[in-house]
Structure formats: structure tokens, C-alpha cells
Length: 511
Ligand code: FRU
Image 1 (cartoon, protein in one colour):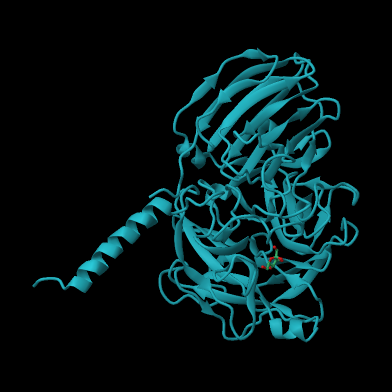
Image 2 (cartoon, helix red, strand yellow; image 1 turned 180 degrees about the vertical axis):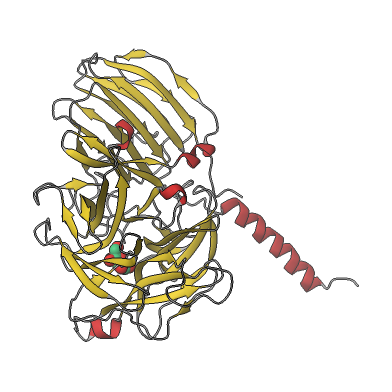
């Protein structure tokens, strides 16, 4: 049978569309190439991070119909290696009870909910239901917690008919449950952000919850609400169990806007106690763009795998100059607890799986840096790994400059006089969308003989890990033209470079 003219035309159009799609997929200006971002629309917090049967699930706060925040859904993607991601259909839609705000997912191994019907363990999502009708009516009791379950590895979800499982007694901010199983007391624990503190609830079946503790009223840094808590435990070298409470705060972070604090202490199954004084402020990340981060439930080998949202809620999240989508996640990072003279502290490094994105290695040999020296001008997507001997360096400042032909530049490095590491994005490119963007961000760098810097650079983000990840800084930037040039520099003396490597990285999105 001969195809009709109309059918022929349709075929031609279909194939040219496909071609265009392949060429343009994830190729917009500023589009991250090895970070997760939604195909289109608005994304904020990572939600329901859970590992189950060989898959790392990433759910996220999602509004598919616009690039600004709106009725919240849970978008969904999976990865087998924490490096490349497959987009899956939206998991949870807003309903008559409200928008689906942030929350977590657990594997109900022992069927405590009774949801299991076949072989597959129930995945149970615990999330905040945000009732817009109540919000518009000015009612405080607008947020409550609900659950939903999946019996097919997270592909389809059924909301529990008796939601909410944790109603609100009158707290305007009552959200972001991050549930985990506490083996010693054999119950589920739900850290929940309530106003400017954390409340802890426990349950035997994820349906009936009882409040057992509260923490943080003395620790609150500012006027920002607490959001997206997480509690994780580590075994120290001495075999002691230590708990870390990760606490996102909406405003007042060390380098402006929203950010992530953490507390180190103990947990007895009911409440958290802080090892440090309320005045001790510990920051998970010193950049401006790592918010709402939490860790995976059920990660292999009990690893603490963290993903954050690379933006700043309070300062400019809805204004960043991207086109069809807004926001990306940090790369997945492995958290560890390290002992320091001041006590136990968190450290973080990108997961090792990302190393498979390396295309080639350029070694940088031991040398004295006396001025600006080119180390790479091939690609914007780079991993950089360098180490300096500070005891032999005389430089008052040393660091790196990423730049383009428009003289836009992003600088990151170490300032000896103030004993700080920094990212300077003052002249990095577009910044007219917010007066709070063109800034320099600092992190304290206490005396050390060596300085190692690992940096992951994508089209519009940089993640810097100093001395094995004891300091991290994550910042966005928006050059008018891609940076490709990377230089190392020293000012006011010499920098003694011990060794280094730079790797161009490949895109996870190119088809
Ligand atoms: C944090 C947050 C959460 C809330 C969600 C709504 O970024 O404000 O507290 O659940 O975003 O999208």
C-alpha cells in the first residue's frame, strides 16, 4: 500500500523532530551535564531518597507546568549507579487534601503497615500534605503528614485512605518527615520540622504516631523556619555510636539565605541531645547553593549518601536565569564522621561512581606557581584534584580562575591572611536577577600543612571539597558564554603545588 501524501509529510516531520530533539536534549544554556535536573518545569527538594533492589530512587518536589514553584507533585527518577538517571512518571500528584510537600520513603521490611500483598516489600512514602484552602483561610493547621505505598518498586503509588496519619494541632510550619527505623527500640522514628525546632515522633506501623521529643529551640540561629531534617548515625573508630542531625534552615545561613546546619550528639530512640553548646554552629556546606539535602534510606553497606538541592530558597531560587527548567541537585555525596580537635565533624566527598565520567587524565606535575598558569582550556565539564604544600608556600592567596572570552570569571581558592577558603562569583556572569547573587563566599580553614582541593565544575555550578571534604562549598554561576579556561594562580608569593590532575567529564544526558 502506498503511503498517502499526508502520511509521508507526517513521517518526515516526525523524523526531523526526533533529530532536533536528539541534538537539543539537555543542551540549553546553563543546563547541567552531569547533575540531575528535571526535563522541564520547576524542581526543589530531593524527596524519598531510598535504595531498593538495585535502584537508587530520587523523588523531588516538582511543578511540571511552570518554572516557578506551584502545586507540588513528587517527580521521580532512578539510577543504578548514582551517576546516570532515568526519568520516570510523576509518582504523587496533589489531591483534594492538598499539595504533596517534602518527605521520605522507607522500605517496610517487616510489613509493619500490613500493606504487603505479594513478594515485593512495600515502599512507604511519608510526606507533608499542605492544604492550600486552609492556608488561604489563614489557618495555622494547614500542614499534616500523610502516607502512600508502592508494591511495584516505586512505579505506582496508592495513597492511604485514612490520611492524614499525623494531624496538625495548630503549628503553622509542621513538615518534612524523614523517617527511619531504630533497631534498638524497634520502632519507626520521624524527625519533623516544626516552626524553629525539631520534633520527634515514633510509631510501630507508620500510621499511629506519638510525640517523644523536641530539640533546637535554643539552637535556632535566626528568624528562618527549620525545614527538611534528617538524622543519621555513625560508628566511630572507638566503636561509639554518634548521631548527626542535619537541619535545613530557611534563612540566616552563614553565607546568606537558606542553608544547612548540623548537630552532633546522641539519640536514645526518643529524643536528640547536642554534644556541643547551642552557640556552636556547624555548617554542612559554606556555599550559597546547597539546600534541603537529606540522605538515602537503606543505602548499601549502610553508607550515608546525601543529595541536596542546588539553589537558595530565600535569596533567588525562583529567579535564576534558566529557560525551560529550574534547578538541579548536587552530585550524590558520601558523608562520613571525622574526629577533629573540636570534636566529631561531618566530611563529604562525591560518590566514587562519578569517576566513570572521567574522559582522560592530565597530570599536573610538582611545581612552584609564581603567577597565573594555564592548566586546561578544553572543556567546561571538569573534575579538578590538586594539592598544595602550605608550609612551603609563601603566597598570601592561591587558587583557580575559570574564565571565558568575555572576561567573566569565577575564582576559588585560599586566603592566607584571613585563613579562609572561598568562592568568588562577583564577576562570574549574569547576576542582575538578584542583588544577593554577586557575592564571595567564605569558609574557615584552620591551620593545616597541606591544602587539597577537589572541584566538580558543570555548566552552571561548582562543588568544592577541601582537605578530604571536611569543608564543602557549592555555588551556582551563570556566565554569558561557557567558561573553558582554567588557571591556577598565586598572589603575594609562591604556591608550592605538590601534585594534581584534571579530567574533562562526559555528559550523562547526551543521547
Ligand atoms: C524546603 C521546602 C519544604 C517544603 C517544600 C515545599 O525547600 O520549603 O519545607 O516541604 O520545600 O515545596
